[in-house]
Length: 235
Image (cartoon, rainbow, N blue to C red):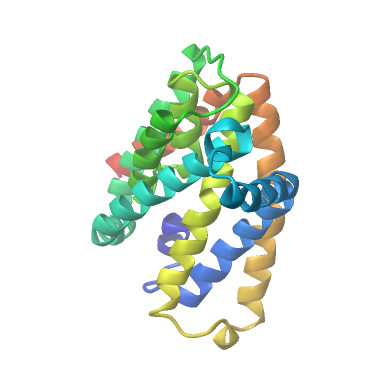
């Protein structure tokens, strides 16, 4: 989005448009993970009656892990919000972000995870990574999945956990941005086309990403991130 704004000479992005695009990708994630979300919701209700389930069941432990990531992300995200705005206005800084993302992705080529779920201490690390990923150019999904894999989690569970923790983060960011934005009703049909496009392409990208992670080739995204990052840094 930062590159697109510069490319099309958009000096000030509409907050309402940004929120709509976020909601498009959020909906794509909800659709893909609808069964996981339903299972977590059922377990959450059961765990409220029997708190021991937060430790004894995989879904209960996942809920605690998601809560840990969300809390840490919120603290770091709020602390970096002004820095993130500065990053978005300087494509050289965005380029550095791409190179950071590429470094994490390349590192997954040596990851040999064996764990089928994310532990709470691993969730804390993922929360830090997701918080830092508010900086433009740093891929939220890329760094969180890569870090989980480097910490010993298998690719598929790392992918699942990364996008489950994205839901409260994206929803929270959208609500925060909405406090200073005009309503979505102020947007024209072009904006809604953008939101629909974000949802469709987001869903397709998730399906492709899942397959790439399963075959252990997440590092291939660095093939375009490295030259793009170097181009922006040196332009």
